[in-house]
Amino acid sequence: MDKGLVILSYVFFTTGVVTASYRGYNFADKDIRLIGGYSALEGRVEIRIHGVWGTVCSYGFDLNDANVLCRMLHKDLRSLEYYIDGRYGVGRGPIFYLNCSGSEQSINNCPRYQYSSTACTHAKDVGLMCVGCQNATLETSHGLLEHVNITNFGDVYSDSCIHGLPSQEFMFTCTPLGGWIELINQCTNTVVRNIRLTGRSDYYMEGFVEVSVGDTWLPLCGYTTINRNVYYIDNIGIDPKAKVVCSMIGKRYKASSYLEKLLEKPAVTITSCIGNETRISFCKHLKGHACKYQAWIACQVNTTLKQSN
Image 1: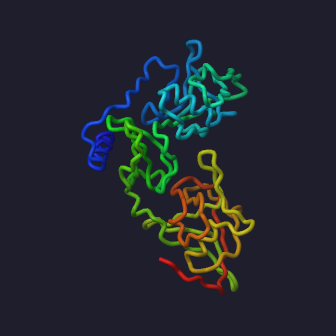
Image 2: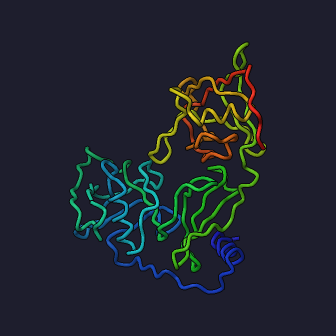
């Protein structure tokens, strides 16, 4: 079945929507277009200046610039995320630098200039994903939203429960009236359920950490960068992300390190913990994103914590 029909079916059956007014996008004759994504709301940024189409360099680019670009597509749009990893391919033509304050209606009101071919290349072309809901967030309890489709029932944002494996997905919709609704969650079988440490000593339970996601064991990430954000398990003090690992096996935290083992493969990445969690699934975490170094953690063997369900 066509993916667009599947999305419409989910919207219909989960929200009870029978009719809805389309947000009214009109992307014709704009001086901006997004290329290479699932829809006109995501892709490589291409802008037209003095009749010539070019791209935007990622050097110095920030959220203020991204918001202005989305506003050029439609007055109610803002940036949900921008990308500097070349995921939407390389563009052609001149490469422009922007320096917007964020309040402008168009880049025509922003300071800008054209880069030379040696100062910035098309490998640094900016990508963008726009959204019309003010309370929409890129990071959900299931992972990061990666794509958006435009439908008559709203703009549907989605990704895989385990990044890179499209068989199980989660979806949110931004309705024409600005509501932010979870449509579908197929991630119930991808919960982090258990952990294991490779190696032991007389005094510590220690080793490189692996976690079970469904019926698959994945490394626990110690250090990586995802969408410009750096995530790591700190080896100074007691990092709550490391503490929760020892809590899962009923032990107290002793030490951790994130530069012991080069990984360069998909892993589970804990993005944040409050500090009182007893399971990784209670922390914000991402599954399946590339990780640079695997986490190493030591727990104290001669102490036992009371397990909680």
